[in-house]
Length: 111
Image (cartoon, rainbow, N blue to C red):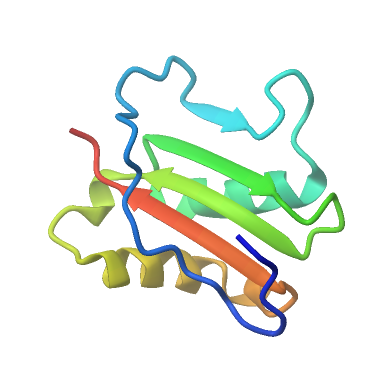
């Protein structure tokens, strides 16, 4: 998506691709390289708070850490609306979001 200045952009759709065939539990945006410090920091927070079965955090700002895309799947989302699922992610990252220009969140529930 396009950069959104001084706002949090929230994705509105569930992941369309089935994630149950993914062999890696957690995956960097750059599979052959280490996650950036920002990606790792956000991943660690979400692993501790939401206990995802799948998590991908990507710095989509070109490396400056101002915009991220998060794909997250968790049983903790069961019975919750998309808005409630996204709120869980935003609450877990409340301090980090203060320094972001944009955030795209895609949530799903394991099949």
